[in-house]
Image (cartoon, rainbow, N blue to C red; front, side):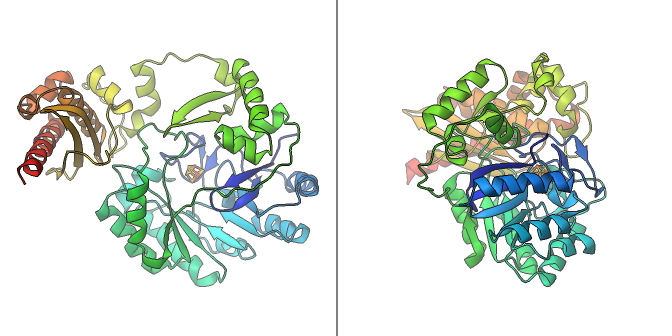
Length: 463
Ligand code: SF4
């Protein structure tokens, strides 16, 4: 039987939490670029009984007998839980079985529907999301179903607050170079004033995301953004230490069941399944050797993931640029059109695998420029003895901006300041194998931002 109850997992917010998965992987109203579950395979607004309630409840009964020390029961899992048409029955049944508080993690996209708002009435805590301050970035970050407009979604959050007296913690998931920019966060602050959640919890990429271009925001920036929300704002705290010493043998199914829904570090697995880390590592080694798990590095941690379809994962796909373009072409630009043929392989490859992307702490030089097209680029430099030893960038622009920022920082790295300051639009275009006429301005933005960062370094030294 499919397992609908998983964990317990150690959640950063909810402590030791038993998860209940109400929709199969991966059915959602969104297809967020940062989703740790990968891309949405069924983007829908249809509400139905995706998983059978009797099976969910019999599994829950069994797990509640085994796991008496829980902080929360959490409805979440492999997609959007409010899509389950029997959500009120699930909540009522859980509350009849246990005094453990019940939380619902939802993307909030259906709260404009009075029936969905009503179905959450008996939850103890609701954690909806708001990841963007306007329609453009909502489309970019959350990639919602066609029938969900930004204004409609925000109106739903406001209406839910009016009718729900228990706590609402609004999760704001910020992305480096996209929404983690003062002006964008300010827009979210403005909406939060209308929504009036009890808490605003800032989060960022901590596990391998659906799209490689979803990058994390450094802790110090997150803390600065949290302060913009006044007393409500907080960065989601590191997970608590359970102090659990109870060990039990892990089954392969336990581990796969958890990792299929949620990539975990060794520590997450060991704590969540109450295993000794050495035992967890032993199991992971076996599963990796069998090809049932994959491992990926993110932010200095290794996360393990179980592919949703083990058979499909055995099929090898050529990892060529063409293959990735075919897979991801819909995100090439903000109009969501396919990658046009006139883009060179170098440009396309840098969009999907930009080099030197991300902010730098304590840089020697830094510049941020918004071009006439509205795209913003930032470049950070580390300089030693008159030579650029490291250059990084972020941009909220589309594919050609990413490719241009990547190439500008690649060209600058290892050069003297004088050499790097001479790079012009044409140098970046030449290195990229050209860009179509309508995208060439991205190379100007990159060249100008690089020059401004060098200028900033020189100004700092002159002071
Ligand atoms: S992050 Fe949540 S809302 Fe976004 S696609 Fe994944 S499951 Fe859906």
